[in-house]
Image (cartoon, rainbow, N blue to C red; front, side, top):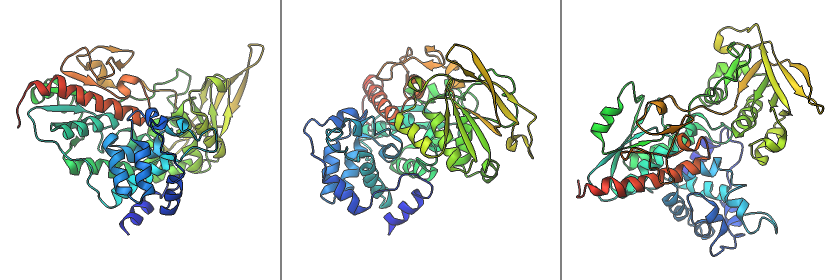
Length: 441
C-alpha cells in the first residue's frame, strides 16, 4: 500500500509511466548480465547495472536499490532525467540486435520501491574530525555531502533557495520529474544525517570568511546563473521569460501561470536540451501553439535527438535558421508577470545568404539560450574562466581549501555527471584535507 501511494503521487504529472512488478520482472529477465558490462562503463557513476537487474529478476528490489544508491545517491532522480538512450541503454549489447534493456525504468522501479518503504540506504561512517562547508544544495552538493557522510565527515550545505535540490527541484521539466520526487530524495539524505540550511545566501547572509572559519574545506556547487539576454529590441517587455524561471513557475504549481499559458502562442529561442524541456512543458501545460526557434540547422543543435522527437510528438513546430530581431509590444495583461506580448519579428536565412523577415503572432517569448555564470562565482577566491570555476576532474581549484564540481565547472551537463563529480571531490577533500587532521571526533 505504501509503495502504491508513493507511485500515485509521483506519477501525477510525469510523462513516463512506471513499470509494474510484472513488467519489471519480465524486462529484467531479458538482460544478458554481461561480464564487463558496457552499460556500467557508460554510466558516469558506474552503477553495477547487471547486478541490480539480476536482483530485480530475483524479486529483490530492495537489494537492487541498495546497489544503485551505493553508487549514485540520487539514483531515483537520475532514473527519470538521465538521457539513458545515449548512456547506459545506448551502450547495451542488445541495442543492435533487438532493443536495449530498459535500464532507466528498471532503476526507477527499484528506487521508487526503496523510497516507498522508507528503506535505509545511506549509512554514516565512523565519525572523524573535520567539516566541510558546501555551497549549493543541487546534485553536486548533495552528492558531495552524502559521500562525506559515508566517509565519516560532517558537512553543512548552504542553499540560497527556500527548498533544496537545485535544478532537480526547480529546473527539470515537470513531465520528467515532479518536485515531490526531488523532495523525497532530499528528505532521504536529511534523515541519514546530511545538514542543509536553506534560505542562506553566501555573500549576503554568511560571508566566505565566516565559512572558512567554520569549516576545514569549502565545496562549491552553485551551478550556473540566469539565462542572459540575447540583445534584441523589446526583450525586457513583460511577457518575455527566462526559460528556467518559466519551468520553475510551472513546477511550483503557479495556477496563474497555467491560466496565462492556456491557449497562448509561445516562441522559445534556443537549441539545447533546456529549450526542449521548455517547449515540451509549454505544450503539455496547455499552450495553443509552440515554436522552437534555432538560428542554425538541425545538425548544429545540441539537443538530444530523442528529446527533439518528444517535443515534436507534443506538437512543437521546429523553425530552423531563424534569428530573432525584436519582440513586439505593447504588452497586455493584469500584471507584468502575467502579461503577453504582441509578437516576435525574426529573420529566416535564405539559401543565397539573404534573409526574409517574418513575424510570429507570439503571446509569450521564452529565452532558453544557455546560462551565464552564477553571481557568486566572481566573488570566490579561486580561478575562474568565462563565468565558470576552473577545477580538475577531482574537484581541485586554484585554492587548496576550495573544491568545486557540477555545472559551475562544466557549464552544464547531466545530473549524473554532477553526482559523479561531487563524489570524486568529496573523496579528494577527505584524502587531502580532512584526512590530515587525524583522529575521531
